[in-house]
Structure formats: structure tokens, C-alpha cells
Length: 84
Image (cartoon, rainbow, N blue to C red; front, side, top):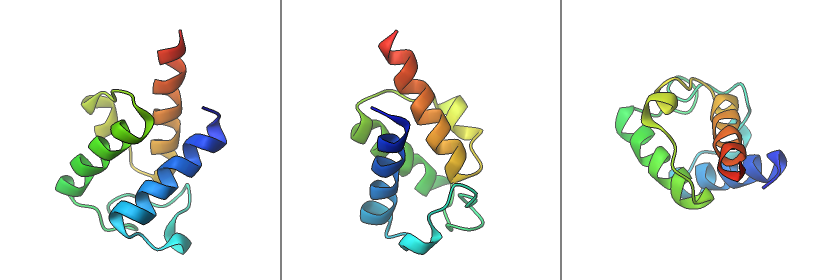
């Protein structure tokens, strides 16, 4: 999966599953402050991302993400490591 495909997949999850308005989906958008996610939403997002990209994402690494751009990078990294 290319980086652009990862971004597109994550954006689809944000729009379809969490009803985030498309105009709020930007790499610099802060998960809690800008998108309104609480810790329960973050857990749901982790599970849905794992299902959508068919990969296991470490909870400790996911806890470190602050922006949507961080989520893109983390998922891309997980997928790249999966190929090795």
C-alpha cells in the first residue's frame, strides 16, 4: 500500500466511521483538540485502523500520536515493517 493509499484509507475511516467532516481532515489536525476525539474514540480508531489495513498497531506507539499526520506516518511505518 502506497503512502497516498494509506492516507486515503485513514481518511475514509475518519469520514465514514467517525463522521468527521471532510474539511477537518488535514495532516495537522490534532486528534483531541481539532477532531474532538476522547480516549474511547482513540481506542475505537485504533481498532478500525487495524481492521482497515489488516495490520497490528502497537498501543504504546499509537498513544504517542497527536495529529492525523502522525497517524498516517505510524500506519505507513507499520505496513512497511510488515513487508520486511
